[in-house]
Length: 273
Image 1: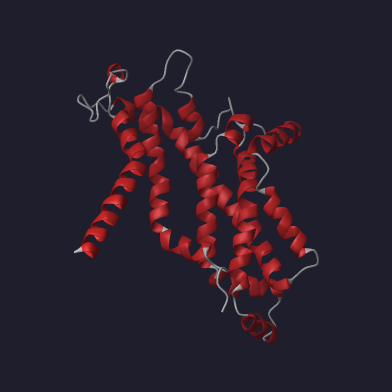
Image 2 (image 1 turned 180 degrees about the horizontal axis):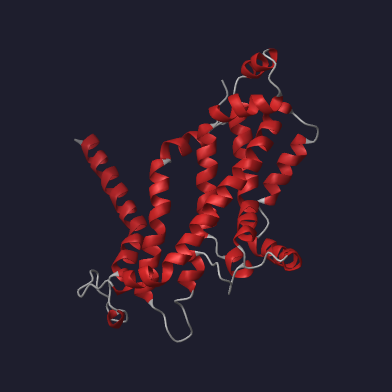
């Protein structure tokens, strides 16, 4: 009897904590259907009594270009991050270059640099190169956040790949690049999915680089599209929340589909046989 009570108690606690964590998501949905004139009701409605689709109409009318730009930036960031980080992780894990330990420490320290400082540095450089308010400029900037983390993930994962496979490939005449492309990279699928997911999410939710390097341009991501709804005297909260709901769908779908690969990729290298 006591064991059953403890089980029910744990279940109830888990449900309560889950409800608390998911309440902001529910409130986002609630506000996205709430008419503008009901926003300042006190107390607010827990359910949209007079539900409206005005916010979602605003998304279709105004936000689709921002969503398209964010999608291009996200996919470009993923491609650039994997292209740079996978070979670097392979080199650190298997080729053992001189100074590899120092490089790993530098990559770890690079993740501690505040984004606003990096944005200011990019602004000065892009001003000279003509990359301000451009999609390639944002892809490069967002990749600087993802690459250090990605290199560490790839290094940890590839360290667990048996060295006998590499030796067998070398005996067959495969050069390091061929070994990496034909053996190491296919075996690192979980790490590739993990890195791709985090790189996409970072670029999709970026605001600091977007506002500093692309604000006022013709190609702005969805974070700036949401920001445009907020003014000194007007806040279109139903449109803001509707845009947030639509913008969260791609990230949620990708996260659900990639969940099992991410779990394996993040824990790679944590346990040694």
